[in-house]
Length: 163
Ligand code: GDP
Ligand code: MG
Image (tube, rainbow, N blue to C red; front, side):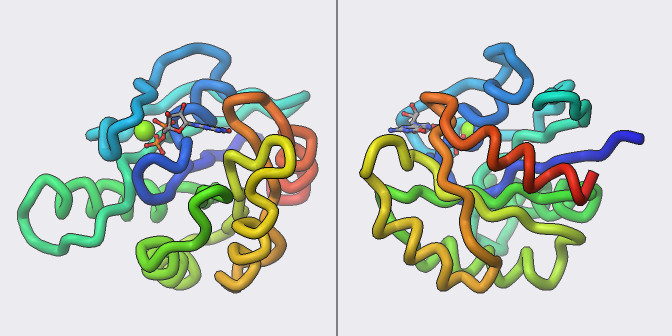
């Protein structure tokens, strides 16, 4: 049995970095500029003995019109609908933003299972942001660092019961 994991969150929180880490290759473009991932990218994810399909989504954008952002958002909603598990990534250094709250609400209504991850939490940075993320009402956030590979054991333990 395998499952599909969709990595979702607003632009620049580190979704593509996390995707690359789970796939073990640099398939997704990582960039300082928000909104670099324009489509859905699929890869073969592995973590410990787990094997799964992982989807790197475009940033969840708030526009509802026919703009590029509107299309990205609909594409992301499709990924959420098709995924067995959503990994909702927030930026522990930036703290919770209005966009995070908006999309937390969508995920609460739409996703089958949500795992909340506060990324960029290497070292002591991001402790306040991770506390704030608890307020999203999606459970205790995993503190991870996609860039440094920290918190992957906690992610594994969160996935196992849902896999
Ligand atoms: P995405 O837009 O959500 O896909 O984010 P990216 O993966 O493109 O990363 C956005 C920026 O955050 C890049 O400059 C990354 O190097 C940086 N970044 C990603 N993960 C981490 C992390 O764990 N710690 C820190 N400090 N920076 C990170
Ligand atoms: Mg990206």
